[in-house]
Length: 178
Image (tube, rainbow, N blue to C red; front, side):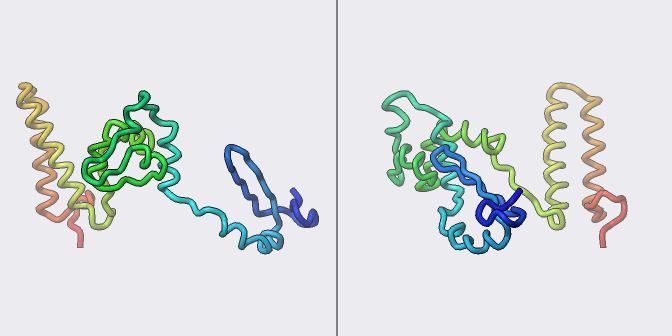
């Protein structure tokens, strides 16, 4: 494909711009792209707030006169202002707008509860600790349901993990880490 501007060289820079639903594409060679470089950086910067506001606009349509009039009791932010800007006013807004936020968060993240991430190097102990907590909860549940065979298997898994933690084998290799 030839450059849209000079029509001499191969286009290697491909730009797509969508404004008000209208898509425009430009295909430029490296030299022509360098000439226009300042223009590319003058365009509005990508913002997570703009993304969130865009997702909110079509995500949940409140009954007339209800959610749009919601206001945070702590900071005074109106829900309609949040939808427009994508920015919450304070931590209390999460509770005030919970019903409206949940479907959007579920769509973006897959769920509404943040689980966080753990760095692979430093997180081995943390991951094992979380796994132990989950197994202990499953053990309590199995005992409460009188599923004693399952409870015995869970107990053995818990003991093995605790032994690995005591031995310093958090990598799961069977040998202590140095």
